[in-house]
Structures are given as structure tokens and as C-alpha cells.
Length: 382
Image (cartoon, rainbow, N blue to C red; front, side):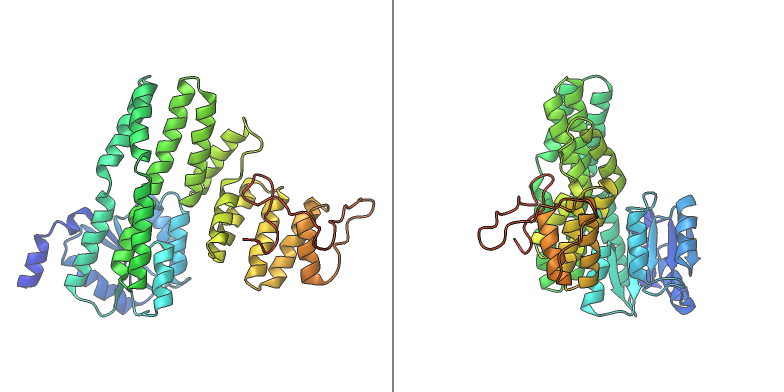
């Protein structure tokens, strides 16, 4: 009892007044609730079904989720991804408590955005450590958050110069996000998963802060009548929203920039190119699929999807998206070359369509690199 009383003096649990336990295993649910009650939450609610949990938590948001790997209707990893994609629940900390101890599963959980990973059976001390870490993530960058609020207030009060200075100070520490990302990668190599989670979460939160600051800078320059700087920072905001997987914000910002510059690159396509070059093909595909929602008539995005599938030996999907690219633009030489590589035949253009075939052999001109707006990199390029 002395151990529990000592925990009750901790400040870690006080932030988590409403705790949701999500698991299809009744024994696990009972055990997790008993452990959590030692930290005196006001309420503990239980969910076996992910769909029910999401609907309920959207109405009555919890402060913390204790998540098992097995739910009645989906895997715990899928539930984490569901949370991340739900605007009303994004950022809700979820600590996985599970019997799954494979390294790949742990890495997938980190990628999906868990706030902690605990193996069963576990001690009160272990739970407390993760509660402290989750609370630290919640409170991280409070000074910068306050600075962001002050900058917005200055802008609203009609003082764009003061707002520009405040927003500029925030984005001036952009390298910190890369620092924490690199730290997280190092911790992964050392199998220090708790520290890796903390580092990656800090990197993500910093990037989210930068996205808001870039958008604020854009609005401040717009108030000063500087349209060039406005578009510059709106484009940066769209790209940073894409990097933090915030589709709606990226879409709204991208559409606003398109009103002034029809050649602005799709931020998710740019992100996909970056990830592909880093060898993260699944991440690239995720970004490209988001890119399609922004520019559904862009053959370059479909070709990039086809190329990513081809590089991962998923030839059926590669062929499907190569055809989609060519359905939009039958003259697309790189897509035609990929189509022939997959199917062994030339793409059959619709009747009456004149198709300009690319020159054959080593004299064939190189395509524009896919980092450039509106073009895709040569197939098989870097």
C-alpha cells in the first residue's frame, strides 16, 4: 500500500482525469483499470469495439487511452491510425499495453503514433513512467504555444510587424525538429523504444507548430500587402501540413495558393518524392494517395504511385496506376515506358489520339526531375 500511496502524490496522473481502456480482452481491461485506479482518475471507460470508442470519444473526449493490440473489430495498430486520421481525436495520447513483443510490431506502433509501449505483465512503476512521458509530451513547447497565441493576437490587433517577428522566432528553430527526429532514429537502433517515441513525438509537435507559424507569417505579409512573401509562406505551410499528415489543412492552404499560382507543386506529391528517395516506399505511397485527393487529374501523381509500386515488386498495382496516368495523358513517355516494362506491350491509346512516342536508345532525352512542378522523375532514377 505504501507503493501506491507514493504514486498518489505524483503529479503524473492528475492531468489524466478521464481514461479510456480499449481492448477486447476482459481480463486485460480489468487489470489495466485496476492499475490505473492507483493514479486516481475521475473516470475510467471501457470499449471493446474501435468504432464505438471513436464515436463515444468524439463526443466525450478522454485525456488518455490505454490500448490493447486486439479489439473486437480491428487491430490496435489500425485503431492508432484511425485516431491519427480523425481531426477531433488527433493528438489524444494512446499508450499501447500488449503481449505483442516483436520488434516489427513495436516499430509499427511507433510509426502509427503511440505515446508509449508497455509489455504485459507490467508494474505500477512502469505505468507511472509512461504516464509521466505522456504528460511531458502534452506540456512540451508550452512557451512556444503561448508565443504562437501572442503572434495571432498581434495579427488580429492589426500589428503585422510584431506578428512577423513573433512567428519568425518560432520557425527560426526549425532545425530542432530534425534534431529530435535524428535522435529518435538513433534510439531505435539501440532498441530504446520509449526514448524513440518521445523524440519522434517532439519532432512531430514542432513541425505542427511550424506549420501554424508559416501560415501566420503568410497572413501577416498579406496584411502588409506583400503578395510574394504571402505565397512563399503559404506554400511552406502547405508543405509542412503535408509532412505532419494534416490533409484538410494542407488542402485548404494548397487551394489558396493555387488561386495565385497554378503551377505550385502538390505538397503531398513533393513529400512522396522525398520519402521515395529516402527508401521509404510505403510512406511515399501514403503521401501520393493523399496527393491524389488534391490533384486528381494530375498524371504525374499517378505515375509516381505506379513507380513506387513497381519498385516494391507490386506489379499489378503498378500497372493499374500506369494506366491511370496514361488515361489522362497518353503522350506521357515515362508512363508509356513503365507500361511496356510491366505488360510487355505498348500502351494502346484511344482511337483517334495521336501519341508521340519517346525516342529509343541512349539518345532518348531525360525527363524533367519529379521534384520540379508538374513532372515526374525518369523511371528508375534517384
